[in-house]
Image (cartoon, rainbow, N blue to C red; front, top):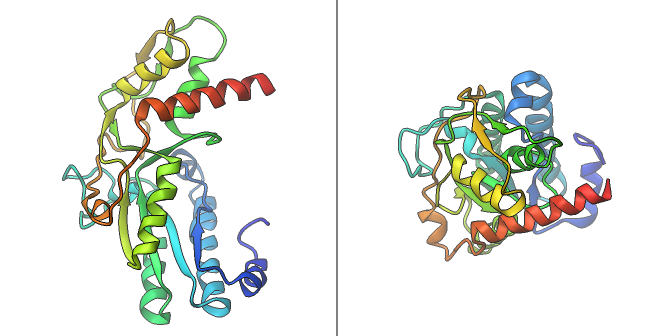
Length: 258
């Protein structure tokens, strides 16, 4: 099924799930900068249709939006709590913010139980985009040229492994709470350190260089305040090296399958 689609109503009428997790979006800051209208249709357009289908066909379903730390832009306060000022730097961030407002609309007016999950930097196998996949693509590219990466290397991200994202969603849903939650490990890592770990796990002989140029729409530093999530008993269980090892193993196998 390609979204948006009116077929979602018939599915919800038949299934009536306890929990619906909306992961449908482009999830690319760069692509949203290039084609903001398409990003809007794939985020706001899709989510509004899902919410209204739930309102009509399955009003007891809890709807969890996979939102993003892009809503914060470049946070003034680190670690960043859910109460921090929202200041997106990209169409992607603005569209996620609008989706969160849609959550509030359907919760306050129609009584739909909604969750806004502000995921920071999720990673894992079969994710064919974002910084880790892009780094591995360059590390495994042909030739012995240095791996050139954007930025200075001092930028930080707060990564969380996909399995831990699923665990966080489960913990939040079972708590019975609604509203907004940061989803992250709460441990920042510099892009330089990330590049070092990936080369050590994959191709230690590759040299890494940072070109100093930053991509528009990307903040310099991220670290989540996850005290609200931790208060529900959540702990990110996957160490960074273990998660990256799994991703490298998957990436190498995917190259062999081509």
